[in-house]
Image (cartoon, rainbow, N blue to C red; front, top):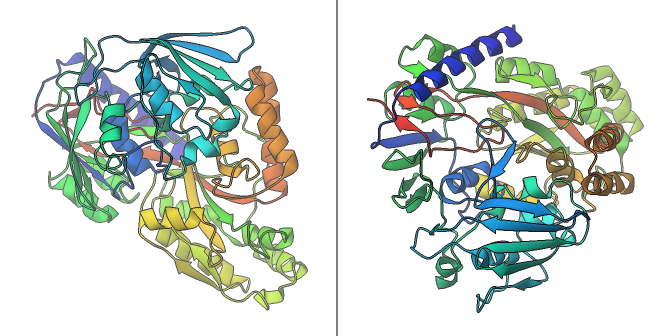
Length: 537
C-alpha cells in the first residue's frame, strides 16, 4: 500500500511541477516557510543541523552545486575544474563578476579564506595581499569529522579566479564534498569585521540576503537584486522562516493561510492535506536515517555487546514506524537508505524479540535489568526528516525497554543544547536519538561521518573499531565505485555484528504547501532551495 501511495504522490508532484514550470514565473511577494525549530547558527563552517543549513542554502553558495532533486554535480561558484592524473590536485576556474551581499568581489582569495579557515594547519596562499585568518574559536565539526585535515594539504590562489587544492591523499568524494554546506564561500571582509557576530549576520553570494533574526521566532531574508545568474530567480521579494515547534500548530497555520509551506507535519495530517483543494504535496523519498545509539564512551555500553543487543531486540521498530510514521517511513536494516549504492541487502536487521532480549540481558549480567539501574534515553525535541516526533518515539522505546526490565528516563533539551551536550558525550547520557540526511549521495557521508569514532572526537556516536576505520580509509581512497561498494557492504555488516547503532527508520519526506507556491522542489539532501520558487496569487 505504501508503494502505491508513494507512486500516486510522485505522479501528483510531477504534474504539479510540470504545470509550474510551464507557467511564466511572477516576481514579488513574501513566502513564509513554517519549520519545526530555530537555527543554531548561520556560519555554515560550524553548524551541523538542518535548521541552520536551510538558511545557508539561500544565503551562501559553494564551488560545486547539486542539481535539482538529485545529488548529481554541476558547476557552482566554480565554472570548471580539472583533476590531475594522480587524483590529488584539483584546479578550479571561478566565475567572474560575482559579488558578495556586502558589495565586495568574489574571487580566489575569498575561496582560500573560506575553506582555509577550517584547516588546523593553515597551509594557504593568497593571490596578492589576502587576509590574515583569525584563530578558530570553535571546532569546525563537519571539516573535522570528515577528516579534511588529513585530506587537504594546501590551498592556493594562483590567479584572481583560479584556486588549486593539493590533497595529501586520493579522496574519492572530494568534489561532492565541495558542494556541501560546510564548504560555503563567505565574504572575508564581513567576517573580519566581527568574527563572533558573523554567526548571526552571514554574508554570502546567494540569491537571498540576510535581513533579521528574532531568536526562536523568525529569520527574514530578502531578494539579492544583484544576483549573478543571468536567468531564473530569485523571484520572491522576501522569505520568512518561522519557527513553529508544534507539528499540529504548524499544519493549522498552513490550513489557515498564515504560512505557505509546512515542514514535517504530523503523519496523520497528510490525509487532511490530500483532501484540501488549496494544498499540494511535494514529496521526496528520504535519503536519511533515524537511529538510536549508545554512549560508547561509557560503561557498560562501551564493551558489553550483549547489553547493546538486548536493547536492539527489545525495541519494536515496526510498531514505531506503523504508529508514529503513519505510512511515511520504512523500518531500517542499514544506516544508509536502500536507494543508495553500497547498501547491504544481506544484513537482516534486529528483529523484535522480547524473549531473546531478556536472555541477552541476563547474559550481559543484568537479569531482568537488576544492577543496571535507571538509564537515560535522550530524545530529540524537534521533528526532523528522519524522525517525526522524537519525544513520542522516546516514550515508545522506553515502554519497550520496560517490558524486559530496563527502566529508561526520557531526557530532552532545546535543540541547540541537545546537540551541544550530546557531542560532549556526557556521563548522564546512556542512549540517544539522532539521525542524518545525506549531504552528497555518497555512502562515505553516512558511514564515515556518523560512525567512525577513530577518525575524530567530533563523530557523534564515538564507536571505535579498528577494522571499520580501515574500511573507511579504503573507501575514501578507492576511485572504482564497484570496489567501494564492496567496502561499504563489509562496513555495514560490521555495524550490525557489533550492534554499534540501532537503525530505526528511513522516512518519506512530504511537506504540504499552499497551491499558490510554484516550482518548490524537495531535495534528497533536505536542502531548502527558494531561488526558483514563486507565488501565484
